[in-house]
Image (tube, rainbow over all chains, first blue to last red; front, side, top):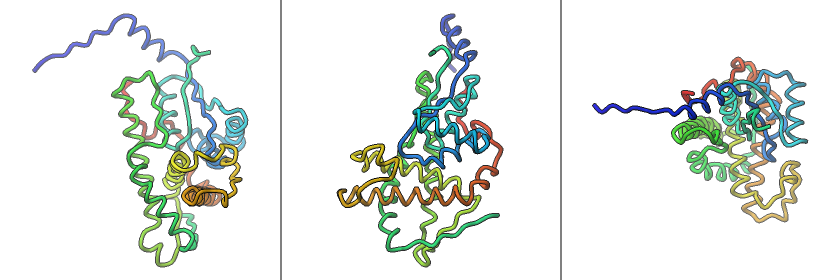
Length: 99
Length: 167
């Protein structure tokens, strides 16, 4: 059986480590389709927010176009991104380095 | 278990179901909102979209099951803890697709506020918009009556069914 060797250059390794260590933001963007009450439900369900916190984030999305709903390590941010996309919200990840 | 039953007018709803069922193939072929992180490599992005699509297909099957043979006998649909979450998500997916396919001519503000003059619309757009409102009504019913059932159905945790991205 042929053996495959993967060579990882020092620059690739550094980039991966930095990506994992950086702080990532999960940002929900406004869309004209999803109902306000639906977005509140999703925030309560996914993040365990109480009604007031969920509504505050929803209003930020509605009025300001975006809301940072979670901040933390990359791996968990990706998991939240996926879960929110399962609920069909428009979501992006941003790293601290982007600011 | 809390359960709600709603009696719908077959005359009104049946034509709308044609629109939903007509879109089913499209919905089953592509996730409504799949935006994997762009810095993931191609294989992971494919896995991401594939897993989202699988969930969407399963949600849509639950929505369509509401409108089986029994529905055409009595016009009644039932929601409870076992189907509410999937139906709410499926309604969102179909609404996104309706907007993409039929409702693009409508301004975002009008769509968001639901303030659309039906008589000015082309018949196909009119039907799609009625369908869009119908699905929103289902979502509202679920949220109004079964919010706590959905919230309490599992502890909040990111990525309950997230793909294994191996990162």
